[in-house]
Image (cartoon, rainbow over all chains, first blue to last red; front, side, top):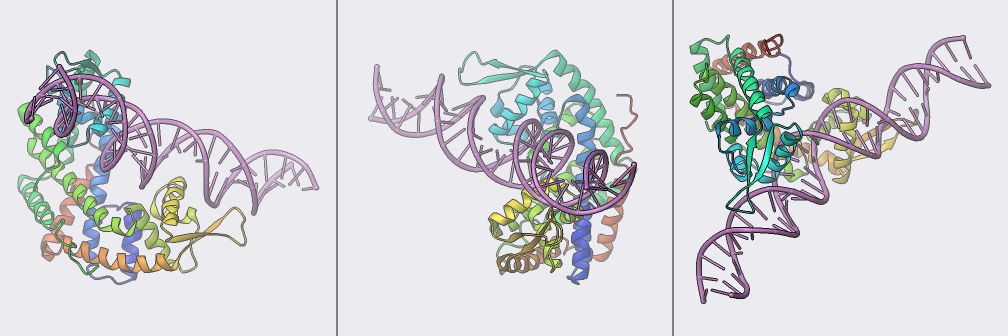
Length: 168
Length: 168
DNA sequence: CATATATAATTAGCCGCCATACTATATGGC
DNA sequence: GCCATATAGTATGGCGGCTAATTATATATG
C-alpha cells in the first residue's frame, strides 16, 4: 500500500533519525492513508451528484424523515454545529435537493424537506454508496473482518490517553 | 469503539433499511472513525505549539534541511500544492517559527529557514509526537501489527476499483 | 537580441469545517 | 404583563485544502 506523500516524507525522516518504533509509525500512517483514500474515493463517487460527504449525511437523514427535520435536529444527528448545517443546507438548496419551509408553530424554526429531485438523488446515491462500501470490504473473510474490527478497537483504546500528562 | 456521530446515524439508517452487508459498512465507519480520532488527538497535541498537521510536516521537512528549502520543494515533498504551502508558511511565519529569505541566485525563489524558536519547537514536538505515535500502537504485539498491516493492505486494494463502471 | 515559454511565489475565490457573535422568537419567573 | 434567559437560524471570519489567474524572473529558441 502506498502512503500519502506527506507520510512517506515523515516516515523517511523518522527512519533517518532512527526514532524508536518506526514500525508503529508506519502502521499509523498506513491507517491514516487508507482512511484518506476511502474518503477521496467516496468524494469522487458523490461529486457527480452535487454531494459532499457532509451533504450526503444530511440527505440520508432527511430521506428517513418524511415529515422533514429542523436544522438543529440535523446538526445533532450528524454531529456537527448548527452553523455547519446552515452551510451544508445552502449547498443542498443550490442543488435544488432540499427546501426550507417555515415551521407553523415556531417562527424561529425551519423544517427541511427533500424536493422531488432530492428524493430521486437520495435513492440513486444510497444504492450506489451501499454497493461501494460492500465492495471495499468485500474481499475480507468473516474472520478477517472480525480480526480487523478487534485490532482497530485495540488501537482506539489508546487514543487520548497517550500524551496527556506527558513531560511536555 | 464509539463511532462518530454521523456514522452512527448512517449505520442506524442502514440497519433500518436492511441494506446488504451492514457489517462491512460498520467496519468501514470504524476505520474512518479511528482515523478521525487519531487526527483529532494529533491536532490537540500540536495546537499548544501553534501547529496544525500541515504546518508540522513542513517543520519536520525544514528541520532536516539545514540549508533551508524552497516552497516548491516543500510542496513536492509534502504532497500539497504550492498555494497551500504559501498559506502554511504564512501561519508558521506568524508564529515566528520560520523566516523567508530571498534566494541569492534566483530572484523568483525563496529559501525557507527555521528560526531559533522554530528549531526549539521542532525538537520538543518531534519528541512528543514520536512518543505519542509509539503509544498509539504500543499495545499491539508484533504479530498483531503484522496482521493489521496486512488487513489494511487488503482493503486498500479495493479502493478506486469498486464503483467505476457501476450502473449509475 | 528579442521573444516565447517555463517556472517561482502569490493572490483570489471556492469548499467544508469550526467557534463566536448576532438577531429574532419563545418561554419561564416575578 | 414584563423582563431575563434560552433557543433557532444565520453571519462572520479563521483554517487548510484546492484550482485558476497574476506577476516577476529565467531560460531557451529563432
